[in-house]
Length: 360
Image (cartoon, helix red, strand yellow):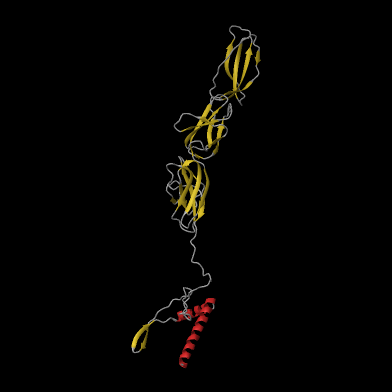
């Protein structure tokens, strides 16, 4: 063996590029050689060797393909959750991982730590249970991935862990107030924002887009069972509300609504028996405990009585007609009939007494 020439070819190309010639100056048999080569760029390569003896005979080795040179870390990014998101309950992870050369070595790993702390806790599986007893607060989520060439990558996002809200309900004990109740799985404050129009999404002002808010209750100590009374409401009105539970960070309940009670109008006449009715005024002017009453327009008329000028009030034609109609309606009722009978009886007694007096 006089020499060996090493060639390479990038994947997908037909031309071979001479890499190195190894001379067998010591005339070793067999002839051993080795070569360390760093490609100019990552990629997949093929290799072949051509041996030449002293007589000029050439022998070519079989091609060696699929040799990958990979110094590029795999790509890794968070799809869900996203940076700055507030997490509630069980949160599945969604990561975008790619490596076009050597490939990913196993599944990505995820761990968490409180912001400002150094100790990490591994999260097994593909989701994170953020409910109690995990403390409320802000956390770093760290995802890591490794490729088969030994390159690694990591991606960190910051998230908040808020309390889980449950059993939200409202009651309306009056026309102007409502009681909102709910529970949280870890102690938080209590507050309700509300409005007369719905808010499918939250705003960025102090009331998160709602027109009204209660004060914040249960600041110290915070509570698990919450009850807030809203006052000063309008009767017969639909209100939309959200509960606000702050334990760092804030959690909002689902938008719900309630309707306040309506004030009842004046009761309709029951048609029952009326007792204690005076018979002093029956025909033409019934005004029996509010059963019938019409307006009287006063007009001044001058009359000469015993040589004196007097001013009196007399019903207008409209009032007289109204009084006549009301009188007829009243006399058609059972009470009216009784009053009529009593009046007739009284009139007969008066006539009898007058007749008796004339006889004497």
